[in-house]
Length: 406
Ligand SMILES: *Cc1c(COP(=O)(O)O)cnc(C)c1O
Image (cartoon, rainbow, N blue to C red; front, side, top):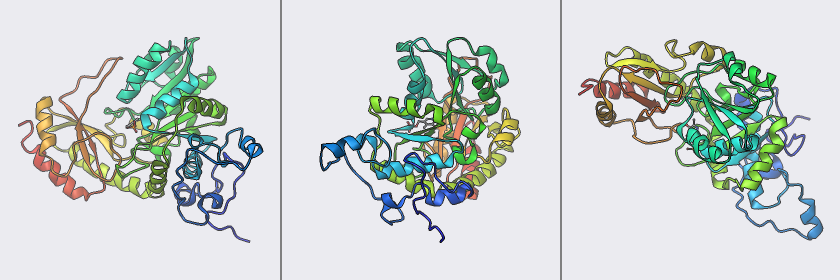
């Protein structure tokens, strides 16, 4: 008797998406779809809940300990959020559990708070997302955690920075704005040898293009706001962990009161179904635009991990299965004001924060560095290449660049 797509084939409430033998694109289609959650619909309903009513006190007690798949209280999830969690867990080889947060930044904070305590030291990549740095420099600092920033191009040499109090190493690859590609396996091996936890912000690649846990990372964080949602209409974050970190993550989330709304989870699950085709198009157009930009006289450098000119491109070639649509250019000469005029001359690129949705965006790059910043030939502009026709985007960039730095 054959199984039908979406039939429950689970091994437990945390169940990794079964069908491990099929390829990721196939897994994406029915991931997290259990019949008891969908009642046969292709997509689960949006379950909005705070109170769950029990028949009697015994039934109320039976809902504990809190676990996915058993309705307990709104903050602990409903079938809509469990379906997304299970789908995200199923995308990561070696994953045991996924928890949701109201934004990517909340996911970063929730993950760090689940592994750190007063007196601990954290090694944070110097090219990390700005709000991640700010969390370390303000809240973690206030609670007695010391953050040391390390060079994103440091690989196995990170072993020299691991001290008695080092409890965690945070990676983000490629780096925000500057796109350095880290040596993830070497850093994870050094961490594991010393019993230090590793966390990665995997928002740029998603598990489809960087199988972080399979490379040795313990905790993988996504701003689902970006590519998972994919339509610029939701804020959501996720943290996916290996088994040894599952209990800590969930306990910390629960006492912090972190939870995600069912509408956001539903939209993210819907976005997830088309993630692979969207990423393929972001990759193809992004590379076309990047290669064209590399040949323009106003452009000093293109910081795109898939181009050999990008710092540590060899790590990209070895570890990544693809590139998404976000990269930067370093302009030749000119200043911040000239870069702003360039961005404002673009007609097909929106000006705004976030990225990963279907539309192209351009913003000035703001680079903060503790370990020392490389000299640049001019201002940095970050581009997100959306799903528009790449020829149109190139024509738009050509007209805007024509008068640069004017
Ligand atoms: C946007 C972003 C975040 C934060 O996500 P929000 O949902 O906006 O809070 C974290 N990390 C990276 C790399 C991001 O680009």
